[in-house]
Length: 248
Ligand SMILES: Nc1ncnc2c1ncn2[C@@H]1O[C@H](COP(=O)(O)OP(=O)(O)OP(=O)(O)O)[C@@H](O)[C@H]1O
Ligand SMILES: [Mg+2]
Image 1: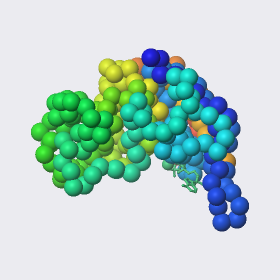
Image 2 (image 1 turned 180 degrees about the horizontal axis):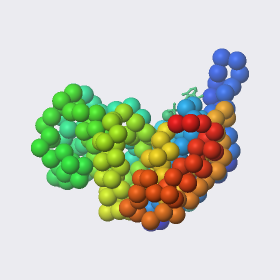
Image 3 (image 1 turned 90 degrees about the horizontal axis):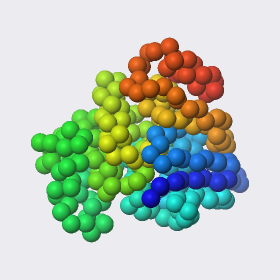
């Protein structure tokens, strides 16, 4: 399977107090298999809405989302999502949180699989901890392990590192790149950070707000591992900031 994801003329309108609000307008995008795609744009431009529609948790008002030639009609194990807010079950241990999706799928050997992904994100030893006993970065790792455990072809990540300190964030970015290299997943990664997008992405989708539209898709043709402050990285950051028309 190639896991080709195509968005064609996708528009999403919500009912508002006085009429309707257009959250996304005419989104066209072809995501390449195994691509690392970052999405940046101002708050409220529809990034979460876009990921939720690809996950099958929301639906376009018009247009279509096509995965491997078939329209997306609901959630499926081939798409895993890491949500903007921590969405761990507070009353379940790390192990039980990671096992959750596997259980729903009726998989065998769920404990062994969950343990493998807990190891992958560097949390061996914390299987029996509860979320409240973990740091923000560790919780994020659990959310990533849980999303990876069901082996989705496409990983949808909504500002997954937004609430951790800069050092942890850099570390998590490197870990994610390692996981991506090893698993060859397609990753759609929403971020507010231009730096993060330039460090991670093969391509960066820049969105405008009200209604959310794609302004531009920039290719990041910089070899990995990237230096966070090299000339070419800085040049691209400048370009992105100009497009966003803001000072981050
Ligand atoms: N269920 C909903 N009902 C009504 N309006 C909604 C709904 N979900 C999103 N919206 C609207 O759609 C627009 C886009 O919201 P969305 O959460 O996708 O933005 P975002 O780009 O993820 O913002 P942020 O960067 O702050 O997370 C907003 O104007 C929001 O009010
Ligand atoms: Mg959002």
